[in-house]
Image (cartoon, rainbow, N blue to C red):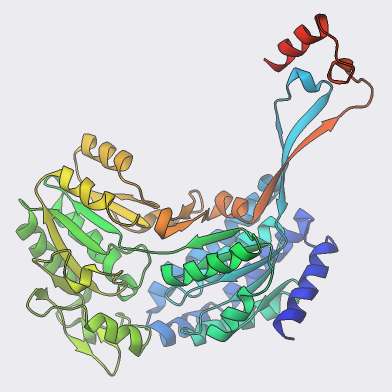
Amino acid sequence: MNIDQILDKQRNYFQSGATLPVSFRIEMLKKLRGAVQKYETEIGLALKEDLGKSGYESFMCETGLVLSEISHMIRHTRRFAARHRVYTPLAQFASQSYKKPSPYGNTLIMSPWNYPFLLTIDPLADAIAAGNTAIVKPSAYSPATSAIIEKIIAECFPPEYVAVVTGGRKENASLLQKKFDLVFFTGSQNVGKEVLRHTAETLTPVVLELGGKSPCIVDSTAKLKLAAKRIVFGKYLNCGQTCVAPDYILCHSSVKDQFIQEIIRQIKKQYGENPLENPDYGKIVNEKHFNRLCGLIDPDKAVLGGDVNKDTRQIAPTVMNHVTWEDAVMQEEIFGPILPILTFDHFDEVYEMLAERPKPLALYLFSEDKRRIREVTERCTYGGGCINDTIIHLATSEMGFGGVGESGMGSYHGRDGFDAFSHTKSIVDKKTWMDLPMRYQPYKKGMYGKLLHLFLK
């Protein structure tokens, strides 16, 4: 079937009411969970082929998180979907007021290549829990994972309910020309702008999960050994191809030299003396991104790494010192295993630097100063983040994950994901056994007016 045929069938299927019963949604989530468990080995092999991910990393960062999200939605969908009664003003006596979640309808989920399984199936689970149909468009840059996604979805669902459309830019452009009830996009800011431009034409609501240059602040009170350990994990996971990876370090000048030594020690400890020979160290997704990243490395400022293997598209974990905002590595989101380190002397500099730049998807602060922690979390604008750790804030279904400003709009995971794929209706159920006359014409002064005033207070 072509895209128009799939969309027409999904519209008809949604209009039939088949997706609305909560029991149906939970049954479909269980089918999806069973299929993910069944094909866990194949998913890992696909991720290895596309991105060089080890089996452990594939489960930790993709399959395991997907199973956790699906299980969370199975447990809580009935509660999420229930109507919620709210206070009714006396002026509306006698009636009941409530809020009722309602699925948007026919949704489009466009996912990226860096975590191709996680960032496809996680939002799909939320869409199913909320009662929608979905067309899923995985990235063309991760073809092996796209193939296993297509296999799983075809085995679980009929295409009039959930369907996969594969391909590249041509298919993306074709999908964005269609009218959906919601578009969920994860990817770059440039493509996000195109998605928003197209959806604006049809006034279609959109969730954008983008990226940006996420700062990691290390102040003079930080426990440097632990900070370095956790920063190295978050930065070089998936070879830096993580939307919430620390993009650069803002380190207090008084501890910079010691911090760099700890970073170097941790890289060697976690990845070995020769990371390019480490079988658990991944690769850059394609030659285009490999060449772009190589162009961001300044050999004169690299204090560790800089080694590359063009045949395997690998770049060793790289640390750059004496970096300025004018360097090429600071002109764009890095999205690779290159860690530039900048310094500051006073926090007012940090606030000023961040305020004049696009709002990041994440911010990380390493500090033992409670006052400073409170000040940074209050004064800086960013999607989400961690205190004394990196990236783990997205690994829970109890908190929403999303950006702000240039890093995105809307959030998902758990209840936030259900809400992202739902419209909440506000409903007043007015009873018929009584009808107060004071709101009808002809209006009367005196007692009715005073009573109406009291009711509305």
